[in-house]
Image (spheres, rainbow, N blue to C red):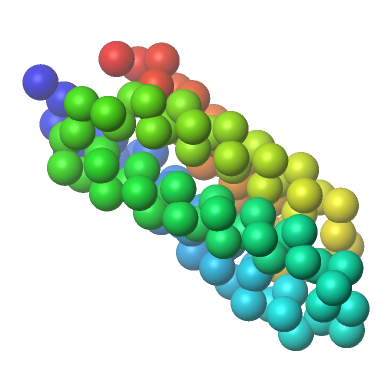
Length: 112
């Protein structure tokens, strides 16, 4: 049986990533050319949503945690790629959090 402790580093990475994505999306809305940031904002919001869902399912010990973490890693990679296109500090920090989360999710989904 998988325990909360088995998931802890992945849960932490997911929550940190969701927080970074929310901050990035919010910050993008304050940029001068908001239209140019639309894809970044959308990707940030989707990534935050899947990160929160993954963290929640892991904390519940769900049998679906491995599958959602595999999907979460994919979406985190996409978000990082989008954020890396922009020079803003919030985008850079978000991309870093996304890459870390993707790595943790891949480890977790391969672990079980």
